[in-house]
Amino acid sequence: MPIDAGILIDWFDERARDLPWRRADCTAWGVLVSEIMLQQTPVARVEPIWHEWMSRWPVPSALAAASQGEVLRAWGKLGYPRRALRLHEAATAIATGHDDIVPSDVDTLLALPGIGAYTARAVAAFAYGKRVPVVDTNVRRVVARAVHGAGDAGPASVTRDMADVEALLPAAEAPAARFSAALMELGALVCTARTPRCAACPVSGSCAWQRAGRPAYAGPAKAVQRYAGTDRQVRGLLLDVLRGTEEPVSKRRLDVVWPDAGQRDRCLASLLTDGLAEQTADGRFALPGEHS
DNA sequence: AAAGCGTGGTC
DNA sequence: TGACCAAGCTT
Figure 1 (tube, protein in one colour):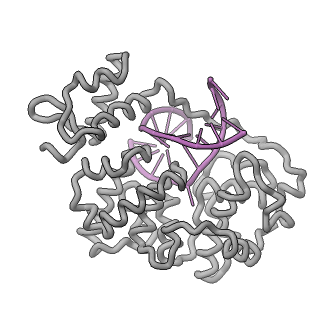
Figure 2 (cartoon, rainbow, N blue to C red):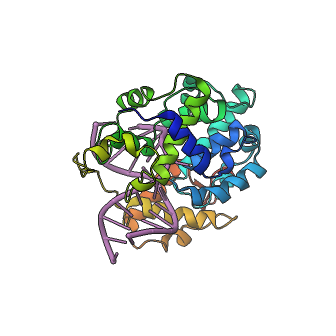
Figure 3 (tube, chains in turn brown, blue, cyan):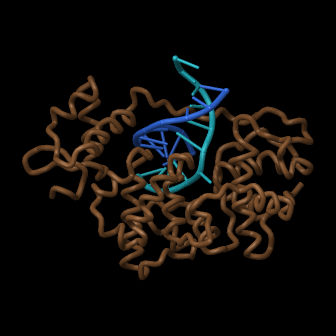
């Protein structure tokens, strides 16, 4: 059973959160920055940082002119700092190769670093009003339930997931883009992972999962991400030291963050490889681009 | 194509 | 408490 676009869009008009990157005066650059920051990071943590970035770097060329270290420091504790580096790279490419204008074409967007299947279409739809399937984890869950009657989405498949959503999309551009935003919002506010609020759902009447009696998820178990004790945690601790100082720090200052020397050194080396840290001529360590 | 990559909030 | 979750991308 397809989701009624009119009903969903009406619900969105009434209930959507007033997020700054959804406002009419938000630029395509603002939308792109928000999409990158929102990858695996909750809205509440993104909002204040997004505002800082918009006033500090209102256009791609402004970000491109900043050093990597400044960008990483401004990224703060949003997590996955490689995103910040890639956004900086993307800004440089947009400034030099696209007249400082964020591309509206999906394939052009896909060619930029850090922009994948979801983000490219999110920018095309939300910044430029294009009719393209926008599939994130929220949308996959909503479709799994409302259309397929499953408790949750199985493993992602870009091709299949996009075809599912394409089939639901209104024919015209403007309502299609609005529908895409509404599907995501429904997944974020109502059709949530843990405790779906089906009583408040505007499309529960046509939901296949409801009709099937809300069966539990039957697919393969999802891999659980460990964090404590992993390289990710150690890299995070090292980076936190570098973020906290303007001056390069000695190796000794980094050694205190983690007891296992082998893991520590491996992580520091990987940060250097990833371009998230740099070693100065005198052997100390710093965020990249500020002391070389 | 499965695994790696940060961080913090929730129940 | 710790497992799960949050607008993914890259290799």
